[in-house]
Length: 330
Image (cartoon, rainbow, N blue to C red; front, side):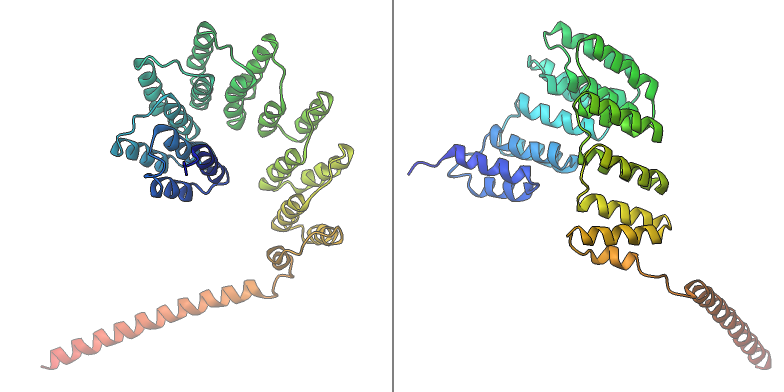
């Protein structure tokens, strides 16, 4: 019976896709007699660490193990590693591996260039990022929406909205339309009114908004303790015909409770239960009435500790004085 390499590769990919990368790596190594180790197999594992879990330490370890097994990394290996380094903001190693690819006469694909413009924009090296765009065009790889989004996203995350808008203008000049990822990027950097404008733009462009869009927006406002805006966004979900699921209820109820809006939190928790969603013990505990006098009890506890310390100090002093007197008598 001939081992089915394609089925084995599919198994490894499936395990990595769902985050079971250690298990996939173990299976690959245990079965190395049936399926000899090669760059393709290691690339599946690298892709898991670099693009699924984004764990640069594990990615480096796998890179070293490739050398130990005498496996030479190929262009795909470099692509995964550059992606990983860029995602964690490691500009030096991203550019170092890119230079190594060029020295080996490998033509970097669009994924490599997208990774580079992302990390350059994240590190506020916009001129260098624009130079990468020029290189792409010269090499016959015109930037696509993903390329421009890779520049827009880190700028929006660091609230450099004007720079992000300039890139959006260039994107439109290149006859590339904003997609859902573009709009999601801009949601990082706008307030309530700006959020409504983006939602309307998404609707006009038939790009949502989706449940994930609202999940992000709710989390954004609740994180900065703006429950009033979160509730307004909740109302907007109905206008955009997006039905809340358990994730939306959980993030809303938890956010309202932690912001001190317990009454409203309980209302939405009851609504969640009436919609048939499962009970959440952690949320239920969060919504319980705060214990009375808990503050005064904590204060009393601190006072008692302080008194105990003072008492021990006095005892220590008295003990020292007694020792001194006994020594003088001798």
